[in-house]
Amino acid sequence: MCSAILCSCGNDDKEDGSGHMYDLSLNGNPQSLDPQFANDSPSNTVIKNLYSGLMRVDKMGNVVCCNAKKYEVSPSGMVYTFTLKDDNFWFYDANDDDVITEDEYFPVTAYDYAFALRRVLDPRMKSPYREQFSCIVGAFEVMNGLEPLDFAEIHVDDEKTLKIVLNVPNAEFLQLMASPAAYPCNEEFFNSTKGRYGLDDRSVMSNGAFFVRQWFYDPYGSNNILYMKRNDANWSTTYDIMPSFLSFSIEDNEEDIRAVFKEGETECFTTLNSSLYNEEKYLIQGIPATTLGLVFNTEDEIFSNVNMRKALALSINKTELGSRIDSDLQIAHGIIPPALMVHGRSYRELVSDKSLGAYDETQAIECYEAAKKEANFASLGELKILVNAETVDSSYLHILTRKWQDIFGFYIGIEDVSASEFNSRIAQGDYTIALYPLKGDTAMGSAIIEKLKKSGVCGDLAGFDAVVEAMHSCSTVDHLVESYSNAEKLIIDSYSFVPIFYKNSYLIANKANEDIIYDPFTESVDYRIAQNYD
Image (tube, rainbow, N blue to C red; front, side, top):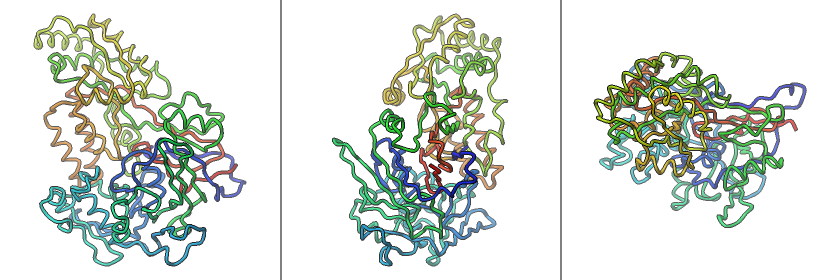
């Protein structure tokens, strides 16, 4: 679900699988190892293994304490008090050897978490996560440069107590505190890096499972690596760290990553396409984290007409379509994919999507005839659905277009393009219809809905701002689930985004491995408890 965990069978009689050195690949050089700033896949994987936060998401998708010993929420739901554990330490590899000395590690304090959160809000920082933390009292004023950083209600009562005051109750706040943006940052060390924090192996230190021993990247050369070693300062205290080393090669693209995996030089990799791999030979975990839906350019006179969009949506027989797709896809009726977890359960278990959308051929024809009168057109002309070829086999869309031709008498073609061209044309409005891949940057329903809003593909949808705001003011989980559902219904009833498929993201590994945890939203891979029995 939110985190895919590869588990092998039949290893009960073997040793505990610890001490292994994992050989792995990153798809590109990490942009930064600054958790308050980085948001690319290679950075997210390294950061996940380098740092840890007050809270974490466990195997089942529950938010639980990590470096926090406990937390308390006020009766109003707006004051969160975190009490830190005594056994989480910063480690800086100053001596470049295998011996940890006392001058290289020191306790993580509440000041480190407060400094990190203030950095997120700092307008000079331009953190991509600042909007997520706008729920903190005073955050708006700080983010807009109206008040100093300490104006935000992030309080350090003592070295082990952090208090945060919110504007309104927020049922997603603990999930936010489990995200990398809330990982600690030591102010003294940060200042010592003189603007290079997170940009090289001398400008990072670890409070997590591993530390960076070496990071070398030459964009014009080869043998680019990022090498991590187990952080023994936190081993068997805060964490049970199973591997001894993580040795990442830095590759240019997924094709190169597949090649080194095929040659047996790496243990696992992530991908959107598992078709080349046999389940008898590999552990393959697919997680439906992306929703593929039709979007329409509302600047187009015809498709700005809701009856036109509704006609196409109502004519899609998803039962028939579902019988003709492979296991990489599921039929989608909702916006939020099944991978999204809410307190240990899939959101799609809590809110079925079966009642969303409908198939009604008769009504579809009526809507099409109404659209022709309202938009004053006789035919659609030459149209194509723009498709990111890296996300889906577009041959499935021919099932839709043939159905439209049978019902309405017009033909719509398919235009497959690269991911970069797709993103560019969407941003420029250079499309009429597109199959849009929607995936949140974090494992929260609000992140998915907000990403759709910010993409602009839904046009100026009335009520969109209100449903987004409602998701950030939920006092209970039930209220949060209801707010997700309301947002989905608004979008689907406007036919601004017509869900077609839920698409899997995959973690593929050799069968000797267990407990490699993959988050398809951040695209990070967590090796802290990974075990190898080879």
